[in-house]
Amino acid sequence: MDYQLLEAQVRALLSEERDELANMANFASFVYHEVPDLNWAGFYFAGRAGELVLGPFNGRPACTRLPAGRGVCGAAFMSKQTIVVDDVNAYTDHIVCDSASASEIALPLTDQSGEVYGVFDIDSPRTARFTPADAVGIGWLVRVLTERVPSRPSFLEHLVR
Image (cartoon, rainbow, N blue to C red; front, side):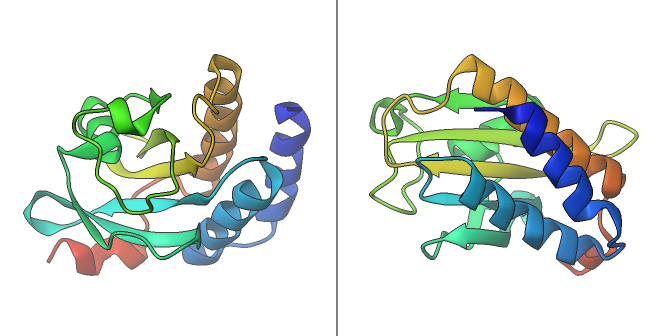
């Protein structure tokens, strides 16, 4: 996978648009269509009462709300670290949104101060789909997005009230 090429394409895709929601929607679609062997790619954002709320995504319908400390997304959110799970069926705290998912990677979204405001989550129907190189490469793509959206997006303000 040529993540340097994908990074350049994401930069071009997001460079002219200022709307945060539009950029996040296009980002999720881009990753879903350009990274092979995926069945879901999208966002969960920090909401009230310690939960993550579904954001823009591509794939089958998903869980709308996740406990912030549970599942792969919750672990990435709380630890502020990328989490890669080779076999979601062996991950004791996995939350099943799509039974076709076999592996998963979740990357935290941080603002300029280092506060986590969400997670970018990707599922694959293939076990052990995400390699260390994928974690680095997808991390580059997420950094491009967070450069364009450097703080908690304004459209999320309704989630914390």
